[in-house]
Picture 1 (tube, one colour):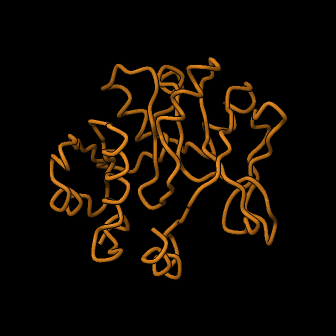
Picture 2: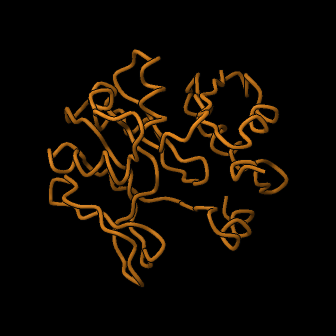
Length: 206
């Protein structure tokens, strides 16, 4: 089954994320789906807890950036809240919109500090929370990590000159070079179910 449907306390993992969005009064979510994506639609449906669920299916892989860019073409909003479907955190998503509006920013990466960041890429951040670099995974190093939640400027994304690309390895380095990518550092729960032991841990963590 798709990773987002992995059972946590007998419920699909993605429902915990959707329940958070409902609680924060979001009214529409677009799920980017690929291989086995129809199974997600069968489980979640077109309505979930009163929230409208739309689907964007990739017939050929476009990369994380390409998929989001194609979705952005159908929207008219200023900013896109982008979230990984296999990570959970309890940090309020609408806080990112406040940060962007109050500080006239473009793109934000949500970050927390981990004592052991060996599984994650580290963010090199200056005193103004501007991201200077994104480092590859390192062994047993602590620091601020990217937890897979972003608030992206829609127009800037549409201006990127490729239709198939990765947010993390293609788009973000350019935004860093142009000094347009900031970190919002917060505290809270965070879990990535990308490895079996963390999927088991999620049952008692969420």
